[in-house]
Amino acid sequence: MPDLFNVKLREGEFFKDYLNRFCAVSVRLQTLNEDMVIVAFVKGVAVSPFSNSLFRNMAESLSEIRERVATHIEAEEDIRTEV
Image 1 (tube, rainbow, N blue to C red):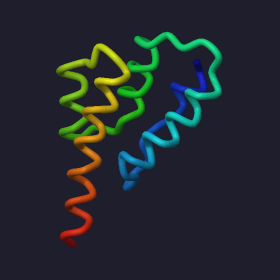
Image 2 (image 1 turned 135 degrees about the vertical axis):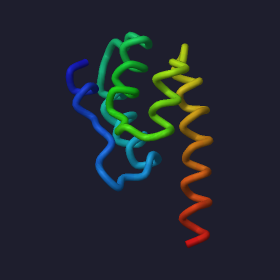
Image 3 (image 1 turned 120 degrees about the vertical axis):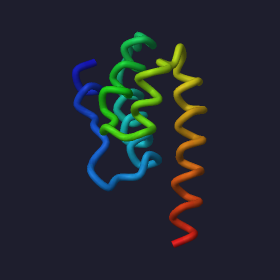
Image 4 (image 1 turned 90 degrees about the vertical axis):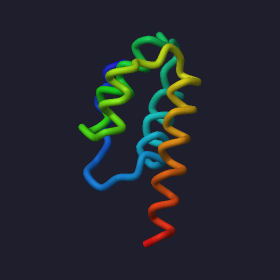
């Protein structure tokens, strides 16, 4: 579990890359406490409007986190393609 809390969103990193790194570490763990995984994911996110929304409305499951992050990733990718 400590390894999971060490995964942090890097400055300038896209959420898609952070999610991939986070999932790669979580797959290596034999037992996962879903609540702790959610907390680790949220704690690893840098302060931003999106992270604030994660703190205000804490997800109740990993699938909810994935859905919310997927929506954010789509928005990031839309912005990247517009530039």
